[in-house]
Length: 495
Ligand code: ATP
Image 1 (spheres, rainbow, N blue to C red):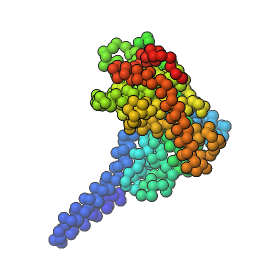
Image 2 (cartoon, protein in one colour; image 1 turned 180 degrees about the vertical axis):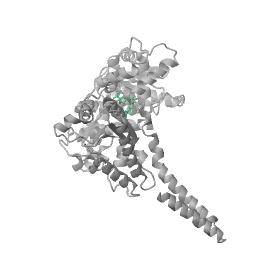
Image 3 (cartoon, rainbow, N blue to C red; image 1 turned 45 degrees about the vertical axis):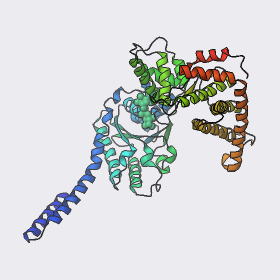
Image 4 (tube, rainbow, N blue to C red; image 1 turned 120 degrees about the vertical axis):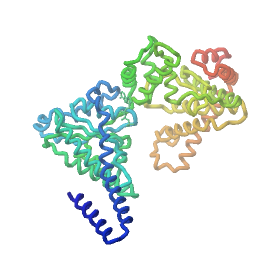
């Protein structure tokens, strides 16, 4: 109503000025600009939220059984969902219903899937938004969107059979990071304040039941007010899947694909340590694409193995480095592979000088069981393998190249890990208390000693090194069988 009165008076005023014979053009222009600005501001929230929830038509088809490797997260989440499923039971026990559940974990581990499955499991309406959708340059827009999100959820819930709705906010850290941190404008703080107000407004006695599910991979950035009891008072850790979890996810994503008989799921699961669910999904897809490229009827084990390289390193590149560079890469990779095999027999799966992603060549380690703890001697072996590429170049050319930069970073990190874990000559340390110079010297000493050891080992097996690199140069790739044959064709290895 107020809007209509203001518009009417404005128009009347301009007509009056025109009758008086004044030039009204600047007034009209000014009115149009102001009107346009307000129209834009008012519709911003509506436009974005109109899209929210579009991806949920198939919510009913998403089930917890379709999510692999997250059994404990699923159990914790199911427990939290009891108040949506059996509100009377929780009330009888005097349990304060949860208002928010926070899913915390690395990207691509299935947080969105869990939220959607939660909606399916409780037959609730599902409304999804991302933290970044609430942050605009204009003050107040985010807060308005939050209000609208909750009011939409209430409306949807009251029209639904189960009278409940789940609001899912992905990237919660974008709108929920610590207040005062974004000094450039107050929009962030206003939006977060509004979210807190809406969460406090969720009343267990309401006719409709609302549960907020947030997802983040930076729980440390969240404002303490958001994660205090009574708001997001349950945090569910969504971790990278372990080996059996990876097998399950692999089976889920290959259900609709024609697999050859030679597929060894256990081997693939072992070779994909550290992969997220999203990476495993991508792996299955890439393997199918590789099989299709070859016109194969079924996807074979080797397609999956090549797809692993592709997911980790990127697509094979057509660009060829110069012949001189290729020769150097073959020596470098042969150095890695030889030392790897010498310090840990059976550890080399393949090596190649076909560029992929940013790498001009690489050695692939054999599949291993998941490992979370390392001894000093195991960490030292990692360092030796990392240093071996540059040292092999040194033997062949009398100098090193920039190709070893990442290897050195890796070696330095591992040496730091040795110190931090109390495995160095410094003994038990609190890393913050160790003076920078002391830390540097200790890491340096570890590296220098291992560099000498690696040098000696390569020197003792120099003919084998050159033999492998020559064959690698000719063949471009060597699988384990060819690699072992080359090792055995030389005189006895010196270890
Ligand atoms: P982000 O933090 O980047 O938003 P997320 O944890 O929400 O990621 P999802 O969006 O749930 O990850 O997962 C992306 C895709 O990866 C899914 O559509 C699915 O194909 C696959 N995926 C991820 N985790 C799993 C899992 N645990 N089981 C089966 N598939 C999974």
